[in-house]
Length: 337
Image (cartoon, rainbow, N blue to C red; front, side, top):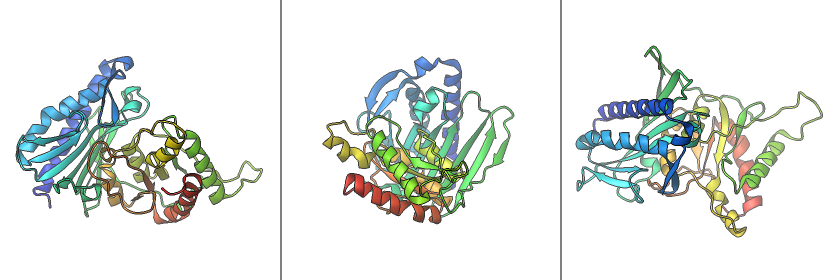
């Protein structure tokens, strides 16, 4: 168990607000070209100039938290290992997994909000996994033109809490999560992530066939049931869409496609990592179902390099409708996965 949970949760929320405000200021006063400049390759991902801004705020403020909770910090911006023991030389009692910006690409071009993510787990050495996370916070980084921004948090077993803040007035209100109760994918948003070149054709084919098998061949009518998709390049953003009832299902299967890519002489896909998923517990506490492609819980080690695939469903009915068909299609296209 993590001690002084409420105090730690509040400190994380304050840290997130400081990172958010620093990024808002940078986005308002810097050009898109400057923020989007590639400056490094670290811990399994490309680092842009905007990432350094959030990382510097994180590291500058985090030492105060570490004085009270000796920890292992896992985050981008910590070199190739992506890990640091704070204070130096201590025996960690907890693990912090932090993504200072999830959704960098959309945010730096002012297309979609980004998110600040933190998950906290008791320290279990190298055996600490995603399922061990007991506290999670995700905070929206709004676009310059956006005056409302949300934050969501959860303590394991206590449900999800949320807040919506008005950047202009400072007013704050309670934000309630409402996953969709729809029993079908018809006339709803959902789909398979295909953000980057490589396996787009594979995932598009699987997605199209899945909808066809579930909804059938659409009759020659404008009233035929349809299913829609929205490619939000942010894992936390995808989880948010599930929690708020905007999406009914999401599958990020990029790591599953890597053997398929290898056989075709193509480079491995840029995949989701554990730090991208460090707030998935918030979605589960809100009632969203999050599983691996085989249908089991996420149990990846906490690091910055492991490749992860996941599937999220707004409710059990959507899961039961989609997951068996998705698994059959993956076997047909990929064999074992």
